[in-house]
Structures are given as C-alpha cells and as structure tokens.
Length: 344
Image: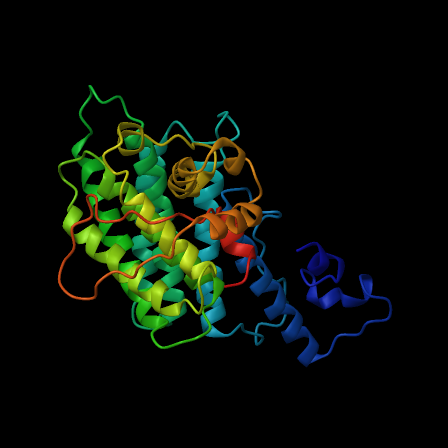
C-alpha cells in the first residue's frame, strides 16, 4: 500500500504530482484507478484475516470522469470491502475499548447485518463467483464477532434468543462459504489467496462451533462441511508438508480436543477483531508441541515436526464420519501469518 501511495494511485488524475513528469491519458487513468481499487480490496482482505487494522482507510479511486467505470467484479469486491472495513473498525477496533470490541455489539450487529442483507439482495443476480465468496466471508466476519462475545458470555446467564438465531445463521453462512469456495476451485491447481483463506477461516470457525457445548448447534452439519473443506484441501496438496497438508493436519488435530473445557466454552484471543476464533483455534493447536517448539518461528517448528512426525493418513471418502477420537495425527505448526504469506 505504501508503494501505491508513493505512486499516487489514490489520486489517478494527479500522477505528475507523485511521479516526475508522469502524464495521464485515458488508458493510464483507467489502469491507475483499477490498480488502486484492487489495492484497497487486498489491503482490507489481509487486515481482516490477520486481525489487525487496515494500513489506511478504504478510499475508492478519485476520478472525475463519469464515463470511467471499474469492471463489474471489481466494483462488487470494492463494495464488499467497504462494508467489511466498517464492521472491523466500528465493532472490532473501537477506540473506547482495550481489546477493541465495542460494548454496543448487538445494536451495531443488527445494523450491519441489515446492510449485508441489502447488499446480498442487490448483488444476487449479478454476483460473480469470487464476489460471492468474499461476501460470505465478510458476513461470517460479522458473525464471528458476535459468536466470540457469546462464547465468553457468563454461562450462568442464558443467551438471548436473537443471539442464538444469529449463531445458527452463522453456521449456515460458514457452510455455504465452504461449499461455494470449494466448488469454485474444483479441479483448479492455482487457488486465489482470498479463496484459500476463506476456506481456512470458515473451517476453523466450524471447528469451534462443533466443539461448543451449545445444544442448538447442528454439529453433524458442521462436521460434514468441515469434511468437504478437508477433502478439497487434501486434493489440492501436492506434497507432504506443503501448506495444504499442514492445514489438513491442523484440522485433524483440532478435531480431537473438542471436549476440552477451555476450548469448547470460551475464546482466549479477543483483540484480533474478526479473526479471534481463528487465532484461538490455531493457538490451541500449538499446545501439541512442547514449550520450546511453541515459541519458535512457524517455519522452524514445521521442519522440526517433519523430522519427528509419522506420515499422515488420508481420511476415507465415503459416508459420514465420527470425529471423537478419530484422528491421532502429528500437527505441523502454522499461524495465520504463515497461511497468508507462505506459498502452497
């Protein structure tokens, strides 16, 4: 983003103010505007997955030419990213709270949930496959904030019926995200980072819900969707200990600790905005290692695990599955930063 700002992409009409004697014509103006729009979308996407504030506010390209329009798909992604940015800033990085989570969560949740309903309805007939994945992921981010608060809710006080209804909806959203994203990548060797990370996010979210002690969760449906994600990631793996293989190992390992009280009843990570549940799951997975390994860099731990582990075995491909005690596989350490910036 800093490089884009230095090039003046955020002010496409004033290229010469940023790059000496650089002139603007119709073609370069369109390129600069599209590039800046794409940069802001990627910036917000990475902010959401890493659970940190965006490096700059999400500002659409400033163009005076009304005839200059962004491609429809890019426009869709930009609209989704703008709403996602607002959710992260208002609900997940509120200036009045130490951990950033606003105290008026339910009130703001209803407002943003309504905005997502409107956006979903408006894009329903024209939404591209990648835009649909981004929209489902952005909405799941909103649900994640509410679910985090509910998991850390005083267990002696019953959850409001509205919160229960929203959590059930979040389960359906995560399931839809996994099925949409995996279908989009069916048979493809190259996975866009945004699609790959959306599958990771939805899968870890469902693992958390399936481990919870809430009786209203359809754990069978959650586990079947996790299975769909696992199959897709396993099929995408091209070698032992590549990124897809390591994620599959994380899924396998986390399925064995669902009965552990701390993981099933609370979220220990509370300041990573919309990614609290994802980081909570990954941090729990690190407990498989000793203290030395847990404090090492992800790449170093992965190499150590390769030397100490036994090969993972693939899941069966038919029928439903029972998760309790099913897996006993070595876990190769990874963190969300590693998932984003390392190659598959």
